Length: 187
Image (tube, rainbow, N blue to C red; front, side, top):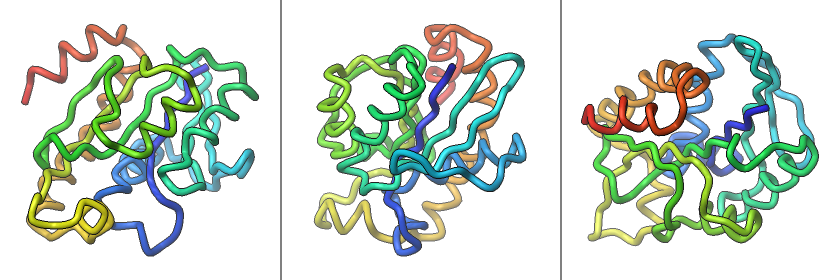
């Protein structure tokens, strides 16, 4: 069983913010598989389906992003999912808008959602799909990530979001090293 987690903050006021890239990305993948009407359990909204013989849970934690690791841990424990079978989709300040990167593990780079995951899973070795949101060092980081995305930047981000259903399909069919080799060098 695979667990695909989009990181974000619950609530309409956060919908179009940089910090909700994980939710936005998950919505695009859900659209491809026509998955609607999530169920609620363990403080998360989830969609469960079978894709080409693989059981998949798509999860949007419903706690603020800096507490999302608790929700993810509960799903892993409840469904007995191996950490090697999770993929976390999140925003990344160190990547330019319009870029993305797949990683097998790594540091939190100051991302509070990843800090929460690392604390709850007791490891930094989990797969990630990082979506670039650039960085404006002239702004407070919190104001920047929770700010509305300007139109020009949104166009670049939407180009990445549109690729995600294809990347996800390959995620199910390729080992992660091949997946990284296929997509990371394209940019």
